[in-house]
Image: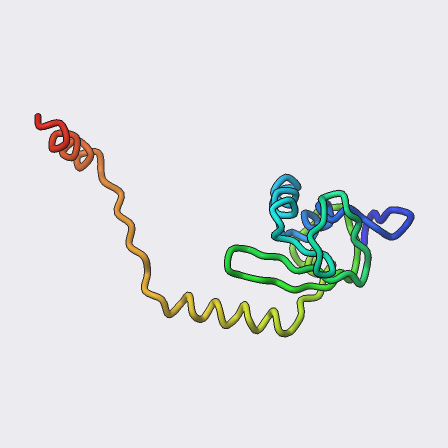
Length: 129
């Protein structure tokens, strides 16, 4: 793609950022350090180099994404260009689609945020005023 180093390898944190899996390199580094990114089945450090053909497993909460690196880039571009840097396995794609369907079927979680008036009434009740 664009801007590849001489050896045909690139730091994994830079590649994950350029491929738009994480909004910042710091988020990519955090995910790698917390074991949510596996390179060929092994936990690695952010400076580990990634090459074309490497297999990555990314964990986003309950979601697991399995991809193969097909191109290297250290430049973050538009999403369509970033999607050309990797190929997601068919099994991973199917699993993600099924998980999305399940989330749609689950009831919506209701969260209540008290208004300013409600907060005042809660304070009155707590402090007996």
